[in-house]
Length: 159
Ligand SMILES: CC(C)(COP(=O)(O)OP(=O)(O)OC[C@H]1O[C@@H](n2cnc3c(N)ncnc32)[C@H](O)[C@@H]1OP(=O)(O)O)[C@@H](O)C(=O)NCCC(=O)NCCS
Image 1 (cartoon, rainbow, N blue to C red):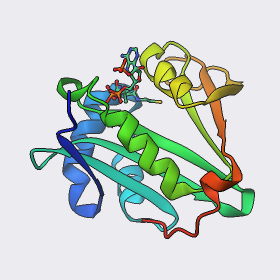
Image 2 (image 1 turned 90 degrees about the vertical axis):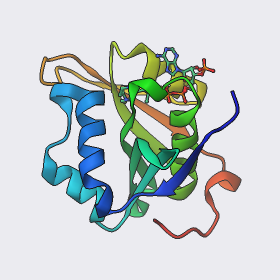
Image 3 (image 1 turned 120 degrees about the vertical axis):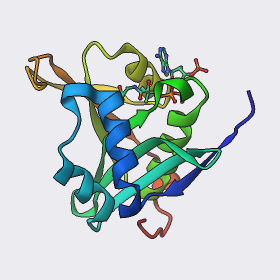
Image 4 (image 1 turned 60 degrees about the vertical axis):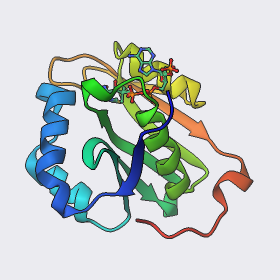
C-alpha cells in the first residue's frame, strides 16, 4: 500500500487527540495528563504525529540527552485501524533522525511481540531488563540501537 499519511511536529494543540491515542494504545499504562503536556511542550523532546486525511492517528516522542550521547524513545502508538501501514516505522525513522545521537534506547513489554518485531527490524537489540516494571508487574525489556557516525553527526535542530 502506498503512503497515505504525513509526519509532522506535534504541538500542545494536539493534547486532546494524543490523550485519546494513548488511552487506546496503552490502556492502564497510558501516561497521565501531565506527562503528555510535558511531551508536547518541554525543550529537548522530539514530538511527531502521523496524520491520515488530516486526522492524527499516531504519535512518537523521544528524549534527547546529548550530555550522555543517548536518546530515549519514550512513547510510540498508532490507532488500531491504521496499523500495519508503515506509520510506526515512519515515525520511528523520523524520530531517530531528529534525535541524532550515537545510541537510542527504549523499553517495551516483554510480551509485546508486534512492537519488539518492529524494533528488531530497525536494529534494536536487548541490553537489559527492568523486572516487574509495568502496573501488572510484567517485565520491561530495554532495547538499544547504536548508530554509525554518519547517521548521527548531522547538525540538527530539535523539534
Ligand atoms: C507497535 C505499533 C506502534 C506498531 O505500529 P504500526 O504502524 O502498525 O507498525 P508498522 O506498520 O510501521 O510496522 C512496521 C513493521 O513492524 C513489524 N510489526 C508491527 N506491528 C506488528 C505486529 N502486530 N505483529 C508483528 N509484526 C509487527 C512488522 O515487521 C511491520 O512490517 P510489515 O507490516 O511489513 O510486516 C502499534 O501496534 C501500536 O500502537 N501498538 C500499541 C502501543 C505499543 O505497543 N507501542 C509500542 C510500545 S514500546
